[in-house]
Length: 221
Image (cartoon, rainbow, N blue to C red; front, side, top):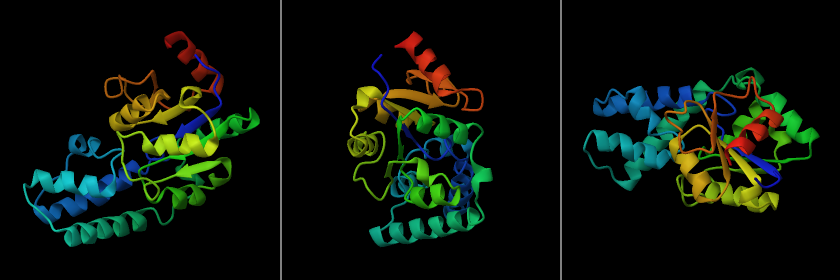
């Protein structure tokens, strides 16, 4: 395994549990078309852009929307989501995240964010961790959404590191696929059953340091 120069983090479900707020907002919008959005269907929205998420939902209802309608419903969903996270602070960080960011900083390992969320810069400011990141690439900055590796490749370019020496932390299947397609080292956050294509999978950062993650990777790669 190459020497690690950088780590790039997805946001939702990796750094903060905003995924549940997205689910609430999408579930409410889906009622517009008499769709009861299930947790299983919601899994398919993880790591996917807002527009593609809406297209998936209306596909369940087998209906077509104009581009103007898509823009309007995406705006409506995002307004609901922003209202849900309006009181967010650093207490929303998932266990072990801040400790790992601090450890990486002390080790002079570069840190980036690669998220499909257009609200990513806003959220890392609200949770008081924006100062840790030397690169922030959100849905505002890319043309291709995951599983295309663009968001991670852009982050690596900003950080001036090679993908093969960069760990990507992801909680979605499409995010892991994007990392693998970009030739990054992929670490899944969650269930191995869902993220089996990652180089390794851990449940979260609470009981993991950079050292334990790298040691586990060294045994697998």
